[in-house]
Image (cartoon, rainbow, N blue to C red; front, top):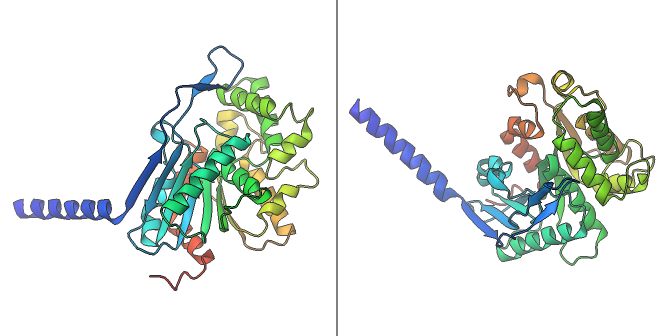
Length: 331
């Protein structure tokens, strides 16, 4: 019995040491700014700034095949929580994982300053750590995914000297159509059946930064949305038509009906399916939609982060590898 205990202890110690030394984690963050930003009309509607910087996981292999990028905020205990779930698979397959955070909490990338900040941090990480500018994938759920779409739009429309060679995007259960989203939250506020912090916060931010509502400033909402059902042109979709796209969605229709009194229109899956349809119409045949079924996610909380947590990361990594160029030429 004592021998078995010692053996188990040694195995656990070996595994822990292997995991600790197999990856190199680099953290570069600037000092925290002692200030806050307004997020609502009330006297206490402010959020403190968060740390601007990045966390980089480098695999133990000397040759890095590609880079997985998460535009993930650094606030509180949520720091890099989505990216960390891919560290193991990325390490095994020779990918670096880069998590980048601006100083703005719950950053929607409304302002060019956010994009410039993210750009500088990404450039610094790539140059300082000699990351290959190929086989670059953006991934994320909720605001992390939305930021990726906004950053790619900014990058492709700018004349910056540093341009990422993006291979693909992994989308997970986030909003693409902010006209729809505004109406969703207006309905939430009108029927008053749930906690209204998020609806009031989001519509305040949209109306403030987009200079009105979808009725008074429709083009601003169309320009900010990667896809919008009410936009007959949907020119933003063209920005993503040459990328490999894999999208994950979890409709959870019954859950949202009972908990939030939501209709099918108040569901991110409507945006994702519409976006993929527009990509297909524009000739992108490298798109894939994965619908998570109730049995795929046993968690009682059907949130966007819950969807990400439930995804099979090994299978996701296999899809990324299939999109990777020269994946068989590097050890």
